[in-house]
Length: 225
Picture 1 (spheres, rainbow, N blue to C red):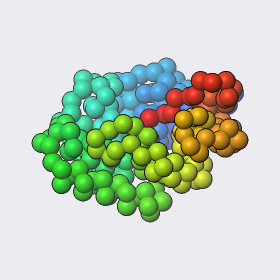
Picture 2: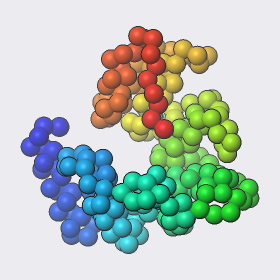
Picture 3: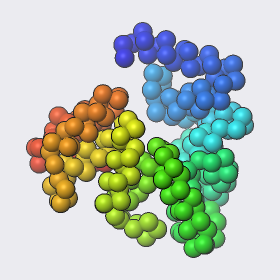
Picture 4: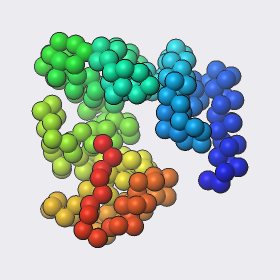
């Protein structure tokens, strides 16, 4: 995207956000948190996420949960993170159920509760199986990690990432490409790695550009987790 197009796009989103569009408000917060088309400003990002959540945005509530969980634009506060993820989950946000399952299992922001962890895990699985792309991508990422909640399962990871990648999710395409590029995986395939990384690049994933350029040089890319 050229500089003028990027500026025009930002101004359009900003105008919609100022007019009260919750999706635009959440998108504007994401731009500020990542420094996309604008100088990075975590305080403004939090402000826009709060405004969007106040209008019922599940995505914005989840982003506030992530902010408090990771200490982005605020101090780490697991209690607040748990509260925001719970609100997002109540609004039907599948990825927030993944975070809640993790927090229940580890006693973060709430008492350790195996039943609560399983409840939210099953809700996330139901959302993924119903075709929710974001939940599919998040499950794919979590199954690629060593953890005591979900357990590392590369086959499940590849399954969920493929479902999301086929729906043109660039994060899933990038992670699936890096998975196929991993020579330690029994289904390693440079051809498939190149295909998925190429599709991720076409969908605007910057990390995939570097991964594609270095493919086959012996250093696997790092999946986006």
